[in-house]
Image (tube, rainbow, N blue to C red; front, side, top):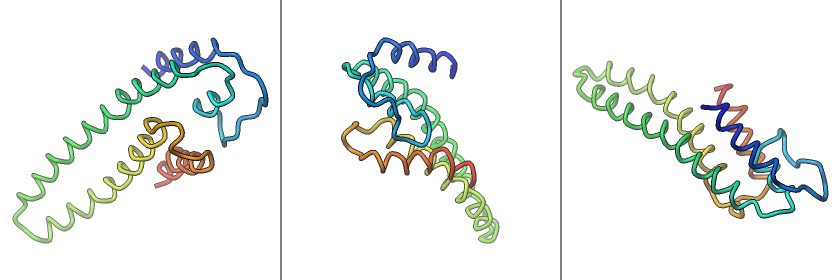
Length: 135
């Protein structure tokens, strides 16, 4: 799935002409930064990126939310207060990392392009690619 998705994006980017500066203003070669260098209309690329983001990001995020709803209902059925506290403590750290991961991915790939300045995109990308794996 990842290879097929990458192939679609590569084919769509290869059809674009690039002019002007050939330097990407980002920490790594992110697709949104490459699209900013294109001289032609990138609307098709952005539509494909949004559509695939819906499937790739919101699908797993929905499954995680359903899973945590089931876990929450199981935790609330625990009779002992101490056991309930331990279970919440274990799940809360994982839920924070999941929220950071999916939250930044949604903001980066699904928000309109003019909504976030380039420096803010760099910081969000750091959260998505560096801080979450460290956590």
